[in-house]
Length: 171
Length: 455
View 1: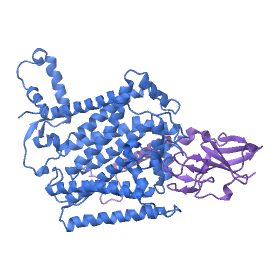
View 2: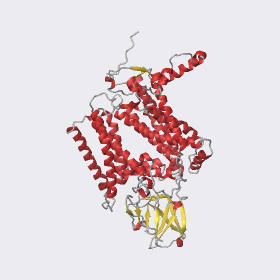
View 3: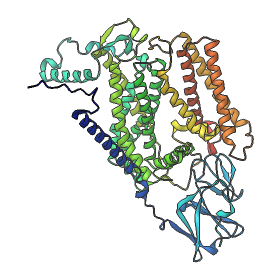
View 4: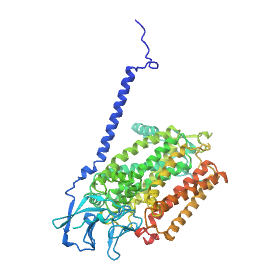
């Protein structure tokens, strides 16, 4: 019987069975690791699904249209916002989260400004920055005027640098 | 001359001076052997005499281990009562404090151990740095150590939110708020960590999972690696490194073990005493619409929050920490003169430079902070240029001054690379310490500078 040939992969263009199967195992291992990572992150990032991305149930009724005087700021802290009715009758729903680091701003009636207790950022009635360190204007929520009621969609915030008249909701 | 107290152990363990319990109980022999074997599984049988001198390492690494075990044990107990939902969390803490037997004591231990762990880990890092125990072959362990330092800070941070009181809620709001100044990934990162745009029930559950499961597991794995590495490189660094001809070895039991025991017991006593006397803080229940004034991040982040008062957030919250982290990771791979390490402050000259740098840094930082307060800010009405005037420009100035100083140390004063590295390191760490002190005790309402007693 002929002597067993030593496996010599250095000159052949084809690989041995051993090497081939080892490579398949390694590939499967990589796929398994990848799947495990995907699963881990799926759980980690599941927050939004768990919280419930409910569009409709996040729309809160703030009050009746006629309850709100022009040129007045109405706090609605449980909704995390201030409802501002401007001089021309238009509405702005301003988030009370300061755009610097996230503290809740307070409306100061005397100075007619939103003031942040954390680093003393100041904003005017429309949310524009009057005093740093806040980098941009306060965020907005969308306002709907339906059936004589003022409704605010709390599910998403509108980020902006400055106030623009197009952001106001009119009757 | 009076011998240190643990010398008592040196003569009573386990030399066979007269009958002890092993004479009468053979089981005691076996038990003692098992105990010895356990110790000798982790420790070498003999250690270099120079390496076990207390003032060589101050036992800081061991202290960190003890504190970690304490956290594990007290955390285990707290887990039986704590509930990780916004509705139940605060009340569960109250019931731990008021209804569970010694619940307040256990919570206090957990609070103080957590605080000390950050301090001790930091001091351990300083010790390792100043004894140059980050040079090869210890460079991998240095990197592991940095990773563990980050884990410790993250553990403290994730645990910070769990009580869900005003302090927790807003500290985490502010600290995660700093994240959105990181370019490109900042907002995504912030929402990832918060589990949404705001801090809520998802945040609490995520933090709880990290704090009680993921981070401790990672810590244990890294600790095992870290300890194994210490053994693999031949133990704690000794003066002169492996070139040190001093080969005097002493048996680990009792010489090292006795010292470790003393350090552990003193530390435990200290933590228990504090926990018995002063309660961990708990403010009112978290109110998302009401920010307290001032709202401060956890104390170890207050250095960064203080930096935020003076620099544009991108530089304060991202650039400076990133530079520091990169520098210390690069450190073991930098070129250096071989003196073997193990000597505190590298040399006599190094010692003097370190001290001088430390003192000058402290004074310089105090002056800079005060200067910034008293010089009126030149009005940057449009915040679009603030990144330049309050960010890029001052950072560039600082960078140039730093480089100039380093170059002059090398050229004019002929310091070695080791000594210069020390100076720079002290500059960074002392600056952060001063800023943290300002942030903790000197910032009051509206983050205005006040005397501590007026806060």
